[in-house]
Image (cartoon, rainbow, N blue to C red; front, side, top):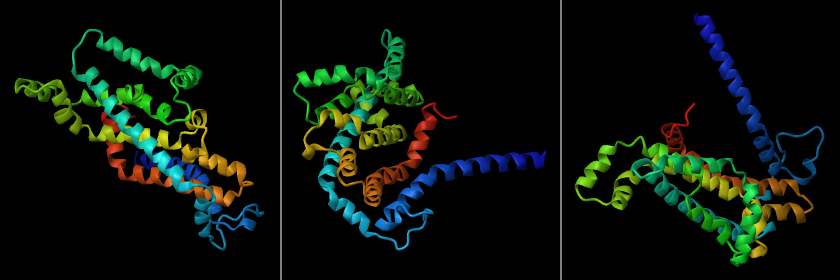
Amino acid sequence: MRMRRTFYAALVYGTLSFGAVSFLLPLFWMISTALKADFQIFAYPPQWMPNPVVWENFKRAIDYFPFWLYARNTMIITVSVVVGQVVTAALVGYGFAKIEWPGRDVGVVFVLATMMLPSQVTMIPLFVLFQRMGWINTWLPLIVPSWFGGGAFNIFLFRQYFRTIPNELSAAARIDGCSEARIFAQIIFPLAKPVVATVSIFAFLWTWNDFIGPLIYLHSAEKYTLALGLRAFQQYSSTEWNLLMAGSLIVMLPIIVLFFLLQRYFVEGMAMSGLKG
């Protein structure tokens, strides 16, 4: 029995290690390419360890296109979307979890059913709508929708988490004369740090890396995001791959830092929202 357990553990850890290496291999190659000189990029056989290491590629990548302008644009859009999704999804999730009203469960089903609708189906109608509103070539189509519900998946996460909070807390606050808004803002929402971190990571990751949205709605170069900037970099730089990889690594850095800072809350939020296993 002990040998069987040892064999099973070795098999599991070996499989996980192989999967981890497989996923990290492209990232390692990306870092390697970012640190190579121009003549090493297409060397054969491939050189995994750059020699010499060219740190200057990162500075060249930043100077090649208006990086700081695009970074500011991306940060404004991303922060606005994250705040909008967290606040509105928490409000809707609280209404589904803690407030009794006719048709509540049916409403939950309808909200979750919207997750089966591909974004490509609504892409053209939304573009026509925003065009008639005069929002094309502005950031509004990228920001405003996040302030209307926050997305079905985020609503589901908040609802599942709020259901784990004892109803006695809300009942005691109502006895003391608290309104629903005050109960939500001062009692329930402060207890939801793990799911707030989870939703924030998802929203930040999606918005920071979003390419198709800015590509559709933004036409002026001064309003571009980093995703469009990297695409323009690739299109007009004769594909200097070492600089492109260096720029991509710089763009990835905030996502990596955010995940490691909020990793504990992220895992806790996923587990307590009923998504574990």
